Length: 372
Length: 163
Image (cartoon, rainbow over all chains, first blue to last red; front, side, top):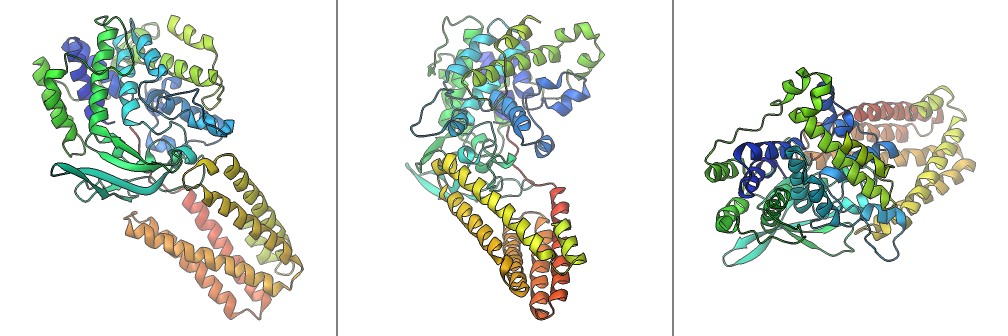
């Protein structure tokens, strides 16, 4: 997902969940900041590097793919962008080394997602923003894993975009190129993807690189063959999935605000969203690279306030200038605490499932961070 | 590759035996590794059979390479030349593919590398009766390949940045 959904759509969802404009701005800023908080950024403000929630392109190119490097990559990408759907998934005749990677496949409505939302309750708004980023990505990044793996994240070359054709639908073959600097050509169905790499642990085989940015576009509906799918195809319906993601965000934030008693999986019937279904559907189905303007206009209509554009440095000076003992009370200080707590929780869950792909994590680590 | 080139260049006599043994061992390790990867992981992957074929082919190349130790040097050199001609051809095809997909200027380097590999093989074929000359041409060719490989390792490569 991109800034359109993580920033502007998250703002809209927060307003519909009952948060004020100021609170919604903090939530959506935190949600978008998850895509910005790299080690490079943290080093520039002298913050703990363990709070990194993403890796920049150059950091990834420089990343080691030995076991320590892979664990760091997995901790970041599985925790914040590809939350595993089922850490105890079973498949016959598969060895553990395969299953450890298979179990990291991302998907919505997991036990881990419920646990994450429950943990955000009673915590600062930064934790809520982080949780909303991860929740939204479980929909967009479904079927891919946050660890470099050819046997999981690989795909065949056959991708077909499913587009409206009169009253029905038709399939159009998608062509891929490997030029990251050239924008995707939506009219000609030409997209950029990562190069095929036969090496299991190549960084090119992380997440949805082989599908390019298709999972990031809300309008995209496409059919493809994932490497883990036993030669079966999958139809990824982003407009439908993104709508469910939006509804689930509103529902989750209502629960966090204690407007809902329970948070249950697979619940999308949210009365606050229903009157806007057509409007949201229009934004989601519009063929465009990024939908920031549409979501921003919708958000400003909802709250009657102006939504400031995202500025990565908005809270930087506050964090740098404040005394060491007060850093944890700043906006970024709270974000960093939330990020470390979330990363520790997910890594601990992966470790507890018997996989060391995210490293060895002690159960007590999370408690210690929460208390501090 | 750089060390092997230096070895052949400065001891054009029997250094090829060491080179062959080293090449056979590297291929053997790579082939076994690929087969283990196939049986534990890739056989569950859509299109994963390619790893089985890759493993078997590399293993066969390893055995073939090891078996060439006893044959006259000219045949060994012909075998090595054929391997380089093949890799040169693959490099040229990959360069053309990169150009077709708009892969920036990266295809220039690939094309140059491939053409030089092919050129080296043609020169080796012309001087095939002068074994020492062939050894020197071959050595210079693999040293050039090694330098290009090192240069390529430091180049930026495109990857899709996931958000």
